[in-house]
Amino acid sequence: MSRFSKDWYLVWGLRACAFVAGAITLLIAIFIVAESLPALRHVGVARFFTDSSWQPNEYADRGTFNLVPMLAGTLFIMTGSVALATPFGIAAALFCRYYAPSAIARIYRRFLELLAGIPSVVFGFWGLVVVVPIINQIHPPGQSVLAAILILGLMILPTIALMADAALANVPADYHRAAASLGLSQWATIRGVILPSAKSGLFTGVILQSGRAIGETLAVLMVAGNIPKIPTSLFEPARTLTANIALEMAYALGDHRSGLFVTGLLLFIIIVSLVACAEWISKGRIYG
Amino acid sequence: MANHRLCLTSNWQDRVAAGILWIMAALVMAVFIWLILSIVRNGLASLSWEFLTAKPSNQGRSGGIGPILVSTSLILLVCMGVSLPIGLGSAILLAEFTPASQWYGRLVRRSLDVLAGIPSIVFGLFGTVFFCQVLGMGYSILAGGLTLACMVLPILIRTSEEGLNSVPQEYRLAAASLGISRTSSLIHLLLPAAIPGLLVGFILGLGRAIAETAALLFTSGYVDRMPESLLDSGRSLTVHIYDLAMNVSGGNQNAYGSALVLLLLLLIINGSASWVANRFRQSRIIQA
Picture (cartoon, chains in turn cyan, yellow):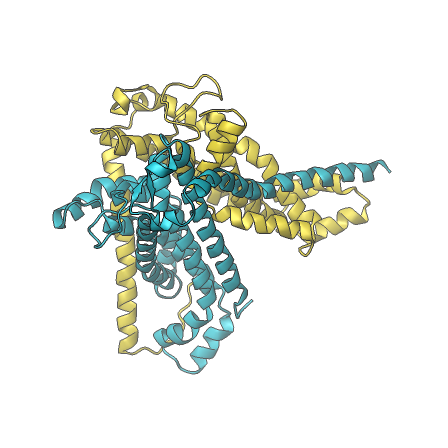
């Protein structure tokens, strides 16, 4: 009898652990919403999109709270970096799996794993001291959308490559043999058979990394220039939603602070929809 | 992973595609080698025993990173000390005690999927409200460590679950047929067998935590003195690099040094993770 009660304690202890782990998501959502409420009430949802600019104030009626420039900055930089990193990431994965001699492929893959772990602040620092001065010579001021796209693209590239590599590894070997028996050339096999059948895996990887690009703070903050204005060219500075929070949180009060939580809420909503999207796509995979 | 040539025929398209892939893969590596070399070359100039142990002076422009390394380790200690039991408990529950279809397990998993995607700056917002204000910890190492603990939970749970799932099913059946309680079979059989997998999860979580900046900016704070207790504010290595690069003119040299230290720490962490994983693959037997 006693051993059953021992199991009983164990199971309930474990359930408590899992409850804590699961409840964190809920807690985060509750606290972000609760802290956003004052601004949402005093400023109103509409003004976050229609105000003339972002010049927040402790009191809602003395400031302007337009988040659209930051939303635009986030979307530009995210789109650019994903558009840059995806072809290179998939190329690196194809290289690893089908073109490189196996010794090189192994080293290349190990190296990608290492690079995927480099902290964002190191990317940001390198961008600031190396990439920004170079861009500054081409077109001042250097701290720009372009710099952010380059640095962020570099940052998500290793993970896109690794996820693409995993997706390619999942393509059944029968497909390769069938293509070979039809006499297809290597590139025709990759283009006509491998890539289409790994499509959902590749998409999932890219979407998850878009989420990471949207959520990245430091690397972007350090090189993007952070002017809250919609950028009109690649060489203009821009500010992202994440940078908006990181830059102003230290001194914000009242409705201004609450407005920053609204920024966080917006990020939260974007990310949750992306995760749902990725899950939906990965359900539709054609192979096991 | 074996490298498979897909077929033997080739034409000009093939050769062009192969050439482009080689060039793209080489380009990717070249940029990363540039990044790492520039950090290593510039960082080596400051790296010394003195630098690792001395106090930072003149806002970090000169002096070393002694107190910052202490704060960083304390933050990591709090983070792993809290997330490890909760994460392990949840992983055991999900892997051993919950059928995949059960509502509780499904709910926890879904919530962890979302948690894994939340941007670190949003964790920072949550931490500053929940730990610093609601729980009254203020800007402290404790608050920073707890915020990071929430952040690393998903990766910790996922890898630990994989570790447990890789223990052969026969062990569980054999234990059950001997009438051993599930608690004892867990403690004496499953956990020892799963230790390498759990260790990899631990190391990956540690790597994620040490690389984080945004979540710490307004939870553990900026203070660069030697911390006297967990309730003191303490600056992590990543925050130190950020601060030197962005807010302190002339701080680049020490930022390079700190970035090199951070990269070396990550190299050690990653290296030990893959070493453990390899040993695990070579000898998947238990000595319990």
